[in-house]
Image (cartoon, rainbow, N blue to C red):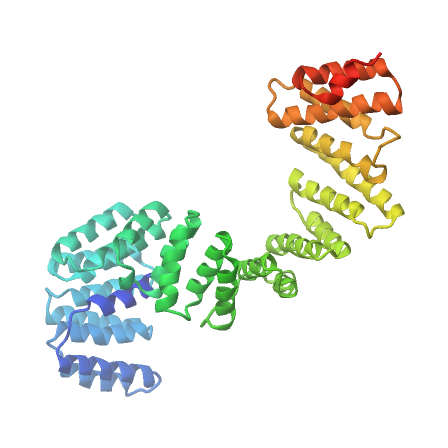
Length: 476
């Protein structure tokens, strides 16, 4: 059983709900805690703590407080000793039983911990700590039972933040919808920084970016240097295309946050916002931090090659754009039609660029055509789309396509579309283009008027008012 999150929650809730001890008892616990912290290696430490204990030995809460100081120091034997002394001081006080349960939590014995928390509830039903600890330790094994315990606590102490504890339990068991439901019932003002971050993250994972942003922004105002909240506001703003706000929080994440371990997604989102605002050099610097960091997952590093390609493409540096896109393609564990199409489109973009030399244009057109051909073979469902794109490539080299290089592709396109069970507007648009091409081809290139009229007739069947088809159909 992993206890870190449980202990964090416990520390926070103790501040909220721990019973107030008498001033003398509080001072005694503080004194004992300082001794335990500062004199861990001193042989007389325990004697000094014992002397403090004697001043509060009848106060079960104070005795348990001393035991908790030992627990914080991971001295389980002494923690257990003082838990027993607390129970001896008052068997109807929850503090000793809760401490015994917490010791079991630290030892990874969830079953025993649950039993001690149950004892706390039974013997001291007015103390909220037993309910809370029981609910937390049983969150994964019995989430509904945990919630049921918390609902009993609500009847005992209506002011207790039951909804917050329930939200954390539901989140811990990956019940995102229920976690969001409970968080929504609680006041944002009542939440600690990590709770605001978790609530915002749950909304983010549900793609409720507006709602997530409201929570993270509230947290930013209350905890301006909390990195997780700055991160979430950055991510939300990128997804909402609020790029000016995104870079503001990107700067806060990287330059005004405490104790942050940066992830690849931090750099990617900040870089994306910078890219969208044409801050290309800064965007490149962010993306390079990902590809150059070997501690990040390979899939993340490979994905950023496309980001770099896009930036350089927007700058008109097609050589660099192609270099990074080819790295992106090479790094794919499984190829998709869209990824290969991106490569073909980049070749095409480079071919139509006015700065590209004629001999390079021919090479780039050939490369684009080859990739489109590969897509048609590897991903048959995309055959119609790439055939339409292949048909347009010859016009880059020969605007009038006097050699008729596009004809085989338009013929294939006609065949594919005519074979469809039903045709939508996009299909009909492509069919019109293919038929129009063949009309022009047989009039101007092959000078076969009869053939041209055949295609004109077919075009008039789907576009009765087409002026070119009408004119050609009347030729003698």
